[in-house]
Image 1 (cartoon, helix red, strand yellow):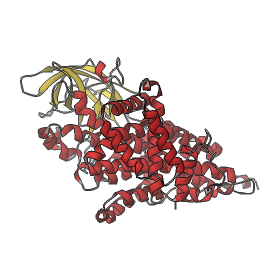
Image 2: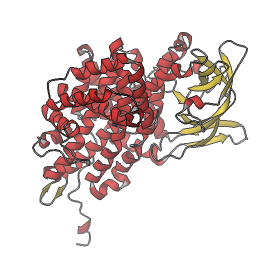
Image 3: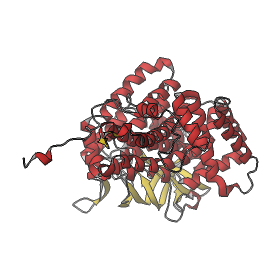
Image 4: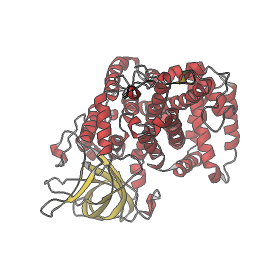
Length: 544
């Protein structure tokens, strides 16, 4: 009898051994909506294979190991030679290699690549979000490099490769390479025009010597980096290789690794350039314009990464409540808990729908789609990343005290959740970027209005929200103080339009009622009780 209290009852089974992609109805629907039918069979196979890996016990264990054993900095070897290397747990390399082999850096070179990669990125974020940084930077470097055809011809095949080679050696000897980025400095932060790193031209055309200090350098173990420095003609974009052609190390002095709130498995560093060799990318004095393609792509990845974190949190919450009993029945059947889960599910699906729609715009690459991205990306980056933290915190609460314990995995999601709102320009930067597009690029607003206009007449609450947005846009004088309000409205209206057009009626109805119609509270779990809440929860339930 003494051991009877150790009998475990009323605990859900681990959410493992399933297809993370196939179990996500919203994500599957979005892929099938945006991908050419001729590509669907291959994409389903690839994404389901990635989904099964993501849902496996083995990768779950690797994720735990990578986070419990964060990277360490080795500035010197045992003989005193400067090496500036970052050491990672083997689990990190296994995960990163799996992400590369799954095509998460190869979107630019295959049909429908952006939609397929976006779906994969959402899935992969749910395993371990930290290795998403080098995958994102490598993917996003391609449009910046394409401003220089010679550099693109040299580097693009390596960056879009599905081979992961971790060793530091000359890039010409590697079949696959990773990229990082260094823009921010101590005195400037998001104000990159306050950059003080200097670039002195060398004898060989297009080459320079850099001197300066970067406050945040993402993925410092990478093979190359895009950085900003001040050349004679002004702020300019440069490619800094980690290892030079002759096999010597480029001066790349890692001062320290950041001790971050979350994203523990990934390294972010302060780096000093001291006579560092660099190759110019684009024209002198046009560094921001050159690197902006990389910034836009990484901002979309912030949206996708947040969508993945939200989906992971909601899946865990629904799974837990499906099995857990309290007060005489399953938690999932209790009206108030069902309302909470349904509300979380709506937010998660809206984020997924918006992220995949923007990825599809990259695949289309028409003038209209490029104009849409100019407004939709900063709005989505602002709003979706902002919603990630309250979603993950509320989802953790659905597990009760279990959700506050590390073994549940929920604390890691909570710590990760603010990251995408901060990286690649925090909330104010996104809101002001949206405002800048509204003032300078009327074709962007036209593209946005065409997109949301496709849903007009389908829901009166959406129609009213579009009308209210147009009224607010009628006067942009003094708009800076309300730029966040504008960004939120742009994102919500676009989400509503997408859900009205493509989601099941119960999802669109819940979104429009609570997010556009004013029939919802400030906290989750305040949806109108008349909605089909059971259908919303069932759609979000991961099928194991």
